Amino acid sequence: MSVLGSCRGQLILQPGREKSLLRRHPWIFSGAVKAVVGSPLSGESVDLLSSDGSWLAKAAYSPSSQIRARVWSFQAQEEIGPEFFRRRLALCLSCREAMGISAQSNAYRLVHGEADGLPACVVDRYGDFLSCQFLSAGAEYWKASIVAALQDLLPGLRGIYERSDNDSRSREGLPLSTGCLWGEEPPDELLIHENGLQFLVDLRHGHKTGFYLDQRDSRLALGTAACAQAEVLDCCCYSGGFGLRALRAGAKRVTFLDAAEKSLNWAGRNAALNGFASERQEFIRGDLFQLLRTFRDSRRSFDIIILDPPKFADTQARLEKAARGYKDINLLACKLLRPGGQLFTFSCSAAMTPELFRKVIGDAARDAGQEALVLQTFTQAPDHPQNLNFPEGHYLTGLQLLLRPPG
Image (cartoon, rainbow, N blue to C red):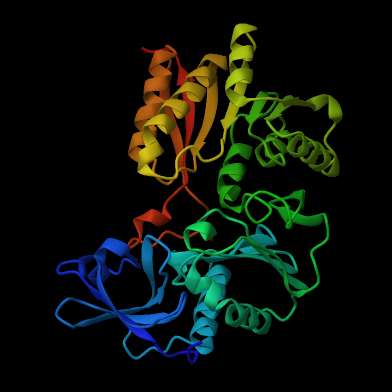
């Protein structure tokens, strides 16, 4: 094991492959590496050098991954050690304080990986608990230092829980890892609040780190739409975030649709927790594509539809199939909307660019005989920041559309 803070080796890049680093992009792929000097272990820090020997950055080495190195710092004099991570985490916390998100919710993202200068490290706060992901060799190597710094910087915490059960761990040569890292285990049900609503979340087994924190602003926008007395369809509802916001805004009835019975039960319990009458709610389990077709064939219609499906494509290779999937569900949704209805539609597939998503949805609306007007666009909430040097950090695209017959 290396001495913490020192660089055990060097990666020398192929000629011309330093260009991305000069633009402050934090990734180096395996094909860009000409030679490895020294014997760095997985996760240890290495110096990145251009083919002519010029120093470029300090990075975490990952010999099993196609992303062979992830940059920690572009400052030659900056030592990569416990104090480095404490400084970076303190900056993350001060940025979130400046955003004022704690006034909206006690659940939000504290650390968003590369955008916050801590590649493949995710830290979400849920009240007095943190839920963390360490998704690369470098993040895993420094996990103990990061957890120690979080304890120091957030003295009121009750516990820190790990949810490193993401497939990206296997691409780093790492096993999946979950469990309590410090303090108390989170309870089976943890109560959070968001803009006047309450939600029960499961930090140990829930989606992502427990809740879709990145959709906070989109949910709030739904509450300002024409929800009063509207009939609303919340597709892929999970624990009911969008549907509950519609009920709070005065929706006559919300139909919650999900493939998982557990999600529907969770949504129902959250609806009851917020005091919404049961007759204003309907819960249907099934496949999204099949149920939308069933609604179409039975001539069922809605005033507002939310389409927030799981990721259809995480790579370019799957993009064409994903585009067809997005078009199919949006075409069906357009056919289910009443005249003047609104569609809130989202893609969390990083490979699906906002431009392509707009084209796909526009094609779907035309094929449904509708004209779609964009009322609002969405992306991930600001506690999931996007660094302009790292375009891969943009993954969530959303549109609020008004559907009307073509002129």
